[in-house]
Image (cartoon, rainbow, N blue to C red; front, side, top):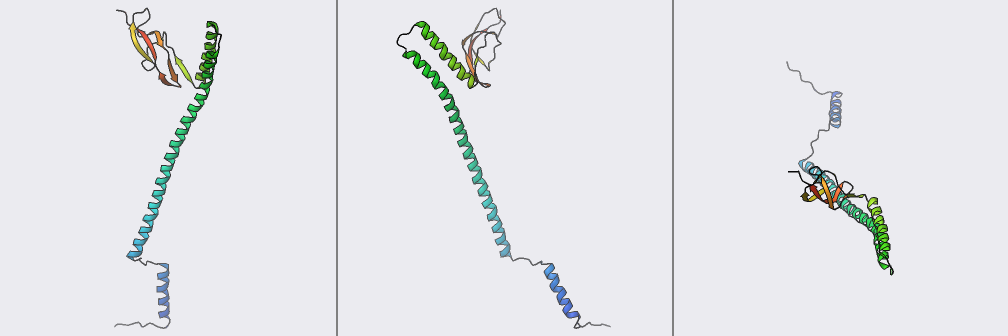
Length: 182
């Protein structure tokens, strides 16, 4: 016995409303392939634009940093140079003296050397004068070995002082080193 249900006036509008409500709550409407492609292209373009912006920003940062380094070097040299001009002025003033004695030249040179040492101190340039110290190839350059009463590999004499800037060797000291007794 089959009973067929016929829609009644009450049940028909209710079922239509339920179907419409389901669609409104559950919009599983699949976008067309063209819409999906356009959306993917927009996102790809957004990502590309963001990447290009970041790349350009990195290049600008690198360029600005390079310019800052160049300016810092110029300014450091400028400051050192202005200090050295005073030493040069003192040397020229000493040479300009018309009636000079050996003592006045010596006195002028001592004052100029004092000025130069002040500039070196200001810029953290230190002398390397290793007489009596153990030979260290990082700070000294041996030009010969001589027999001496001192312990082997000890600096016996300094032919030319070395200089360091902070903890870096500007010029190693040229030294003579004691050789081992035979």
